[in-house]
Each structure stands twice: as structure tokens, then as C-alpha cells.
Length: 121
Image 1: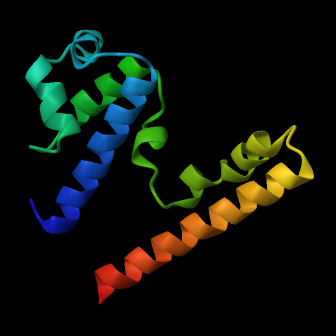
Image 2: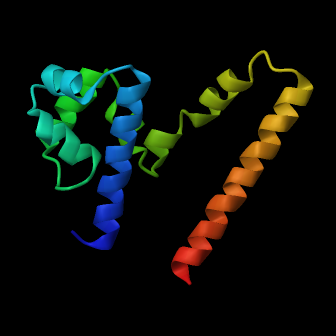
Image 3: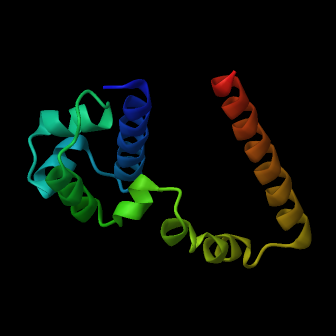
């Protein structure tokens, strides 16, 4: 796999693992629900090989998440819902909490920008 493609598969695999763990599922449980072999789940999460589209669809169904939640593509259709998600996160927060969240978000964004610059240089 090319470096760029490998990074994509690693990111997707990491997101699948993160969601699986957040839902309290083992790899074996995900494999069973997705009708996949256990080694396939491990291979996908660790980006050891390319994933078939049908496997991806089965994983999304087994985890009960949309493909967008795992892929997070940088296109308007998949990012258009983000303002509502941020509003939901901030709902019920005090002004001080909102300010803290804003500062943290700015720092995270700055870190990402620094990493992009390092990758380009």
C-alpha cells in the first residue's frame, strides 16, 4: 500500500477499534455480529490489508454506526452536521465551561496545523 493509502486504512481501522471498545465489544463479538472471521477484524483494525467494501458495510451494521462516522470524509455532506453536534455538546454548559472547551479546541486545531506543516516540510 502507498503511504497515503496506508495512513487512510490505519485511521479507519483505529476508528473502528475505538467505536468497538466504546460499545464494550470484543473483536470476537464484532466478528460474530459482522459475520467475519476473527482474524479479519484484527487485520482491519491494524490496517494489515485492504478491507473489502462488504466487510466495511457489515462492520458498520454490527457497530450500528453510519459509514460517515468511521470515514469522516472531508466533504460538505459528511461535515454539514458538525455545527449541530458542537451545539449539542455545549448545551447546558456554563460560560466558563464553554470558554474552556473553546480554548482546548483552539489548541487541538493548532496542534493539527503544526503536524500538517511538519508532514509537508
